[in-house]
Figure: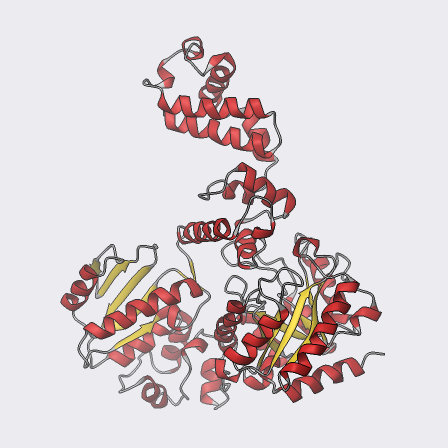
Length: 560
C-alpha cells in the first residue's frame, strides 16, 4: 500500500472524527499524522511497526493503526465512523472549500445530507444564513459542486445550453454562408440530462479543426467515422457530425430523433427515410405532419402526426404570470416589492404568485400566522399601487408526514391559492408516499401539488410514488400539478405530462424563484412542458389574469 493511500485514510479518519465530535486534541493528532505519513522519505510498508512508531509525530498509537491497515486493509475506528455517516456527507468531503466544520453545520443545523440538496440550498440562498457562511463562500461551493457534477459525465441541460450556444454562434461566424449548421441529438430534443452536445454541419474537417485549434476552451480533437469530437474545458463533450449537403436534412432528422422514433419511422415506411429539402418536406413525404424535435421520443407522436392530432405546443411567450415564488418573508433574496416590480416592469407579466414557506419550514424562516397576516397586508397595499398588475396571496404549505397541511383551515382559506409540497420525510416506501400525496391533494384548500417527486437531478432520486394514482387524485380533486422549473428539479417529469393531460389535469410552470433572476427558470420549465406535449390552454400560468382569478375563486367556492 502506497504512502499516499495510507495518508488519505488517516486524513479521512481525522475528518470523520471531527464531524462526529471526537476529542479535538485526538483529531488534531490524527490530522498531523496524515501529513507526516505522506511526507515520510521511505516506503511505510518496508518498516516495522516499532520503527515507524519512532518517527517524530507518529508514535505508538498511530503506528498501531497503520499496521492494522496494512494487515487487514482497514482501520476499525474508521469503518465504524463510515457506517454512521450518510453517503452524501462523505461526498461533501470531496468538495473543494468544504471542511468538516462547515459540513457539520450543513448536516446538523441545515439538515442537508446530499450534494444535490446542498446545491439546491445554494440556489435558494440558504447557506448565507448559517454561521460561517457568506455569499462568496456560497457561490464558491456552488461552483465546486457543478464541477463535481460534470465529472460524473452528465450535465444539466441548463448547464450545457450556454456553452453550446456560444460555440454554435462562434462557429456560425467563421463558416461560409452556404454551410449548414444545426444542433441535433439529445440536445435538440431538450433532454434534461446530457452526456454530449451534438452539432451537424456541412463544414469540412479542415474548417472544424481550424476553429477548434483557435478556441482555447476546446481541449481535445478526435476524428472517427464522420464525427469530429472536442471536449470543452468544463468536461462537456461537443460532437460535430459531418454531412453532405444533398442528404443533410435526412441526416438531421435521423440524428435528432430517439432510437425508438427512427425505428418506428423505418418500420412503418419500408425501412428507409427519404431525402428532402427540409425536415418538413421529409415528414410530409411520409404522410406525416411535422413533428417538433422535442416530441421525437418514440411515444405516440407518429400516430398523432398521421391523424393530424399533434399538440400545438406552448411557447415561453405564452406565459402570462408566475406562481410559486419566495421573498425575504421566508428564504428569498429579494423583497416582495422587488419581486413584484421585476415581474411587472422587466418581464412584463400580469401577475405574481407569492408562496413563501409555511411555518413547519423553520430552516427556511417559514411564516407563522402573525407574519402571514403581515404579508397579506403588504400585498393589499402593493396591489393598489401596482394595479392592474396583481400579486396573488399564496403559500407553499408543507405536507406533513400524515399528508395533512401545516396550517389550520381558518388560515388556509385566506390564501388565494395553496401550493402543497413535501420537504421532509423523503424516505417513505412507495405506498406510504403515494397515500401521503393523495391525502394532501384531497385537502380542499390545495390548489397546486408542488414538485411532486422531490427529485434533484444528478443528486437525489425521486421518492417512489404511484404516478397514476397521484395524478388520478389530482384529476378527481381539480388540483393542478407543478412543473417545477428549477433546472435541478424539472418535476413533474415530462414523461408523465401526457397522462396528466389525458386526465384533464392542469399543469403550472413554476420557477420556485428565490431571487429575481430565478424567474427566468420558467424558460426551462417551458422546454420540458413542450416535451410533455403541453399546450398553453392546459397550463395554469398561461391564463390571462382575469381567467386565473376566476379559476382560483371557483376553486375556493367549491370548498364546503
